[in-house]
Length: 217
Image (cartoon, rainbow, N blue to C red; front, side, top):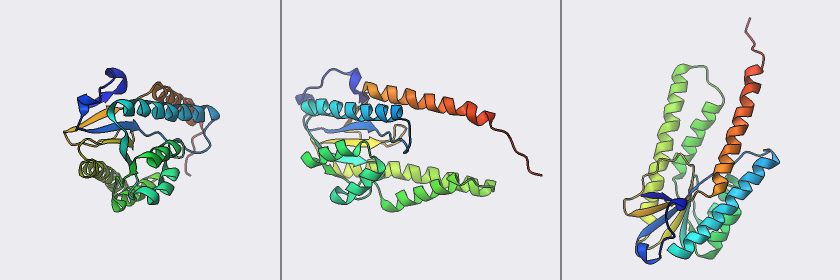
């Protein structure tokens, strides 16, 4: 069961005693070189995530395990990966880890690397429809395998009464064990960030449409 934190009263500690709990955080990472306005929105978002989790921890208990998409090693070995994958969120996540939380290996390396390879193949542009179809299927299959494994890892490692945080793309398809209570962390900065990103996409479309078309002789 997933509940946005804005849609329920402040939970009592006793209400969820002995249950497994996850704070589900949409993971947003923007590419280098974005406008300062975008950086400001991203920094605001992660600052509000930090505050929201701190509030939840006061009611539901400290986060003891951290799961982050694309990370397939744990604790010290995962720090460099975390900084590379999520430069804006990593400072806050590492602060959680320096307290009481363990940074878990959420995924399998082989599947992650295969997924990245399919993504790279698709990014170069393919002429063959057959190969394009194969690459899309490979990409989608490995993406689902990743989601399946994340759910399995959480089920295997999160113990009764523990609280965890999961940082993952918003359109994920992870199926959590039925006994886990999931709290969706959606501070106001999330909506502001998404609106800014949508505006950037809309602004780029007229530019692409106005580019001159070339024909081969």
